[in-house]
Image (cartoon, rainbow over all chains, first blue to last red; front, side):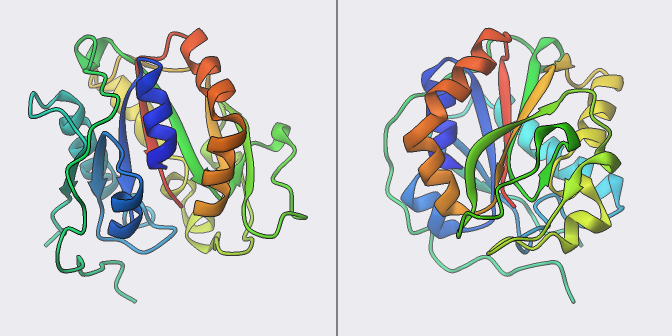
Length: 81
Length: 151
């Protein structure tokens, strides 16, 4: 998805990409990547857990809003307690 | 089974440069499109091509008003739909994003979203073959922000 993110950013669309694999993020770093500690198929976390899913989205939104350094930036979502 | 994975040791990446688009306005005023390498497709989109060995690299459109529950979720090589069959939002987080709009956290959702059928190989082929055209569709829609979700 990093390659898709790069194409979108090149077109002037800000992106944030959830990442399941660090290796994939290294090979094609998206401008803003959020590594999530979940298995394939569970990028938003637990099924039928809207609060936990919203927390993942909120972390992604925060990356978009961050005035931090120009990317590529890869952050880790902290595992839920 | 725990849904949590341990983060691998080391970051394994070098700083790199590339295109970078800052948020053009507050998120509460932005239009967002979802781009997913997904096991889900819209019923009207014809589903994914099951004849492709590893992922279907065609960007399928998912209407912005699609019901998450109505999305078709089908397992295919390298991409298991069992999670999406428990909750479509894991693959296409349409309900969560609509809640963010209702809460005023997001401005609005785009009238269409994009879904690829599956895995990294499909993504790579899609980028080489048709990403530019797919991106132009979102650009023409006035999309400010894209959220990319892998499967």
